[in-house]
Image (cartoon, rainbow, N blue to C red; front, side, top):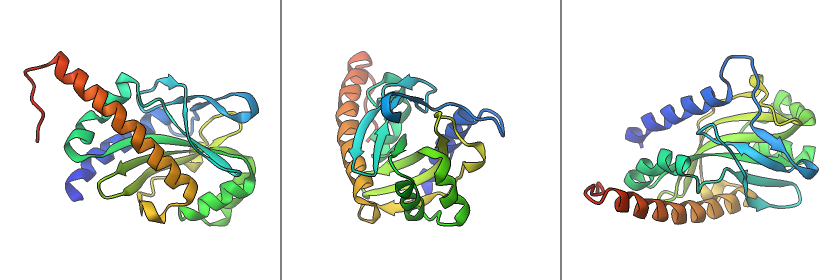
Length: 205
């Protein structure tokens, strides 16, 4: 595990710089659509993309950026090919205050400040590293997002929480499984394109 932490930290730093270009200044990461559903989300490459719904229940919906974009695939390609991992942002739409609070507790943020903040929070943005081989997820950073899709600067955290898939709640498990299916499919397409464009470049194994 130790050899892979450095690229994760680099990803983490990039994520925070993109979302929070200067301390105390909020940035919009979600463009609201009808009924508060995300119409567009800002990915790690600073591009607005139409989000993909990967999980839904009565309490919340979980979205990811468009992982078929060349910029996202290029950013994650090396880690996916060499380590089987990938890093991406997820965006949770809370349908109720209770859903926000329950989710906070599951991720170890059960203090009164975090639970009370759910009264003004519509979304939560997270950056995670997914390792399908180990069936694990590492939470690198997270931030609350207000009703207007703006990051709440003081809510940004870097907990580096680790969970195996069986420790996740059902909605998050569903999101991870669906995301992994989509990412694997898109990486196969991208890998074929890379080798067609550069036939002399062999894959490192």
